[in-house]
Image (cartoon, rainbow, N blue to C red; front, top):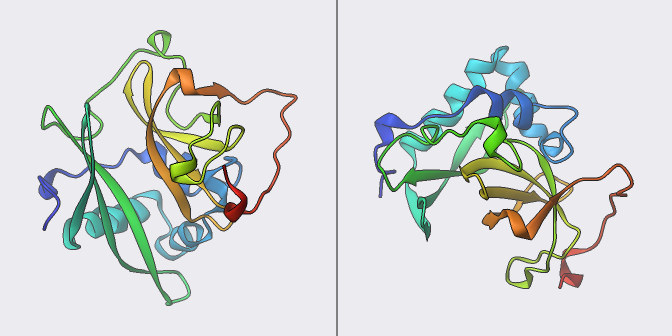
Length: 187
């Protein structure tokens, strides 16, 4: 099945620049393949275009229905700077109002958290291999108190991309210490 409205897919440049290609974002910086794409294409638009093309060309699988829309996974192959092929999975949200993914906007004063904020999970989610204290990144703002949050393993692979309410997360504090644990020991 093709991604619905594939001709209208959209990626906000800030998600590519400040997350996937960031050397400093606590969650996004663990994605070396995207750093290689940056070198290969030499500009932000090149990486964005590769990801847009990926969403348009490969088969989409519906993975979740949320009050805000349908979440699809698109799996396929892209080529890195070194010429090697890499399997990637992208996640796309088709909004319930049939608009492009960036159409839902809120003023900064309305939001408890903003796009690309690093957050801490406040409760265990064993069905996703997550524990209280795990760190994630807000990759989409659905409503002032509802977010799409990505949790990644140290290698950069996505462990979970979840729709989460503000009551289940908190901001990272200056006195938080990041730690590593084995997934098989989760929850």
